Image (cartoon, rainbow over all chains, first blue to last red; front, side):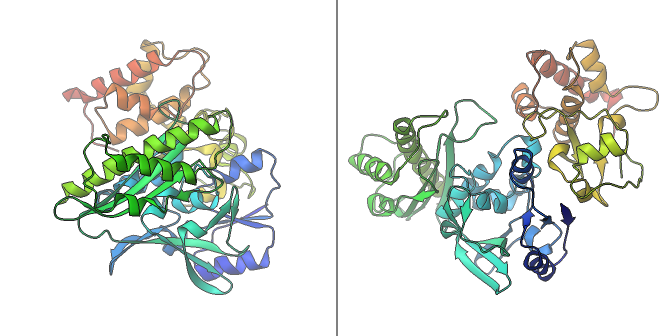
Length: 291
Length: 157
């Protein structure tokens, strides 16, 4: 196995085109354990971290551009990003130990294509686009279209993600992510939920997105959530209003979970309902705090 | 840069930083536990950031700053964390200890006065099968307290 660290997108695409057995990586926190675990070793590993576009983090023209190879520790330490996308930073900050935080990236978390990836639901809820480069040049795709199943992405072999472009939040808008694990640290989500909520000047929900993790082969958006939540005054706790039952029904209808050692399918459905309520409440509270 | 010294070493492309430290450079203070980033025994500090050296390809550290357990003590005295671990009996078999010490150093570099909860999260990526963790947590808190005494306060490295 060879190692290369190209310093430009063109150089990286050339390497990937010339080596059919190549793999890209940023933090290597999934790649190295996969090789250790017996997956076929790539003929070449291409380190993306020395390409400037993959480690850039800036806000411009109504978008945040977040490099796909920035380690989670740098995202959680970034005050500006934490202020505008608290839910995204929560998701990224939940990936593994401090050691893993120093290496794991948004691009890797997405392209490893685990249904339980903690940073993916907030990216989807925020309407993020993945900027993808390859032999055909640059294209963009909604983050929700990158993963097509467990361990599988829609990227061509010689393509990789350089950055995510996330619309800057409009006024009175915020997000949240929560996951459930049986212990307090160092585990993979039984279920997770992200919410993005925009409120009007009275604190009523104007726009909503709810996205679930670990309850289906891919991260899944609860598309009925916006219709159910819009126009509602979302209380500080999830209370007894009838619209919560509608939301829970919509959540369950999106779930297609597995039974495994972390939880049964039934348990995952129940946890997803609870987390959806809680993240909606949290995102709405954060949005109101900006009023 | 390894522990403040500029060094050159040769390695294979597929080697991990852990393997390069132990097998090429003879720096065997850094231990191999799981080899998959779960146990923290191989923790080192790379450009100021705690990482598992088993999850870093050795060629990646070209031109970067690596700190290992061998660089923790000064020439004539131990680091306060090492003193505290000794006095607090914060280890038994010792295999996890270098990783815990590096994780604790990274934590105190960033947060010189952590709460007990912050210490427990700070070493959540390190496994110890002997101590039950409590003596490790107490020893890190003790070292932080000592390092914060006015006569011991040093400028951050």
